[in-house]
Length: 243
Image 1 (tube, rainbow, N blue to C red):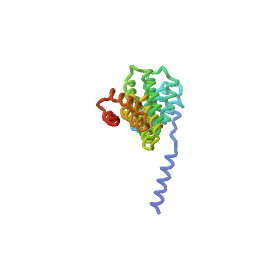
Image 2 (cartoon, one colour):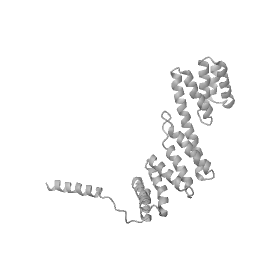
Image 3 (tube, rainbow, N blue to C red):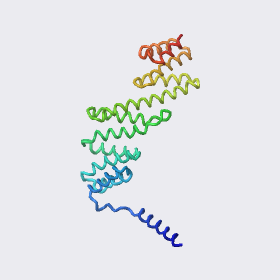
């Protein structure tokens, strides 16, 4: 019986401690910021974000509030709370356009979208948003360290978009919906020429044009493929189709 009572008492104490909220009303902005920073270094991202938020709310006019806004966004990002991170970054960009860390804020916003890019078989709206946000970083801050990485990730975002177009195009092709398939492959050829999918897209054009009896169009697509990618395996396949 004593053991049961002891166990119940422990549960009560733990619950009481957990429900008791920390009173931070008397803490300075610097102290709150430091607490958040320490939690961030310990990978306690949720608690870190809470402290950074408190700096903003309880000390909105302090110099620490501006820093906390950006650090809070970073804590949200590390905790994979991308929507919260993006909202915080949007506020930072809107209200502190001249801040020394503004380039990083733009870059991190792009990364928040970039890290949400799904498998190519799924919707690629994150890819488009990532590309747009990263492109803004490159345009506004071309000489910064963030621009180089942003450019690389822009190419990868485009590659994901092109991959989705190719997946849909192949699906239509397998189901003999040739015009819809051709439209998808045309999109890749026109909009995603710098991606790794361009060679297959040109080959698929040749394939579909042959299937619908447009020999001249098939030859035109094959010629483009041969001129630009003579050593490609897709080019070799296209040349065989035309024989």
